[in-house]
Image (tube, rainbow, N blue to C red):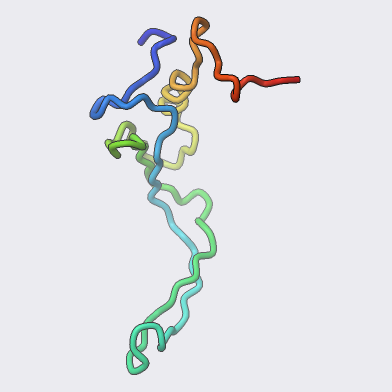
Length: 108
């Protein structure tokens, strides 16, 4: 890929500067009896999310934000996969001959 060519989705062709990430990981919840939620005569459980368990990620998929096609499927606990970083670096490069929009110009 030419350094100035922005990566596109191989499925829908959309130019991509962000990805949607879906991680499989353990979460910590506080569970309680919630009798009145559905039917006062039947007990059910309520769940209050507390936090993700650090280091519990087993895999992360990175998808196109437009068509949801999976572009990367990373196994393990890495939160900084090089393939994804390289892909997004190329997506966020502004070619030298392409002017930067005024709202993105840093003014001192």
